[in-house]
Amino acid sequence: MSKNLSVVLVHGAFVDGSGWQAVYTLLSAEGYEVLVVQNPAITLEGDVAATERAIAEARHPVVLVGHSYGGAVVTEAGDNPKVKAIAYIAAFVPDAGESVAALNEAPAEAGEAKAPVLPPENGYLVVDPAHFAEAFAADVDPDITRFLAAAQVPWWLGAATAPVTRVGWKVRPTFYLLASADRMVPPSAQRHMAERAGARLSEIDSSHAAMLSHPDEVAAFISAAAQTVA
Image (cartoon, rainbow, N blue to C red; front, side, top):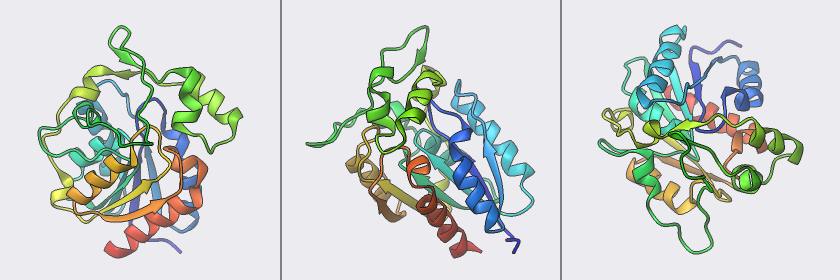
């Protein structure tokens, strides 16, 4: 049955929108119109613009979903009047004046890990390919993670350091899915950001790439968020 809501999926750094494929299929089967953003990953402004275009194309009011760095994008785009809710998945949730890079400076707690990002080369960042699988997607098929490591989308340093100016979570219902086995964004940092934003918090025993390793649960999380604002 067709829903009267659209879902806009926004990926994070180092990957592209194809990681949403399984979630896209599940939500589409439920009757949602689903749009997938492809971030240029060069400037935060450009990624927000790409997301705003998807919001404009949506036929219905929007549930805006961001993963990882995509959390900064949906925070900025989330005050669009067409957006009815924002859902974060293992994502950064900046406040006004904060960047992903600034949030990432917070130390991890004992037993946690932070992203093994290599020093910038010509202004671009990538995850160390030798450690990509264990950091990004330890619970995903190794054949897939080897490809993801080789096919990384370099992330321009300017996008990482750009501060957010608009804060959608202050004006929209907000939901957060915390990945408790994340080795890119420490779970303690995820919890702090989610609680600061007043998000309705859920948890999953997952790596950072929850949409790849647990698509059924991620789709259910997004659908539940949609149902609260339907």
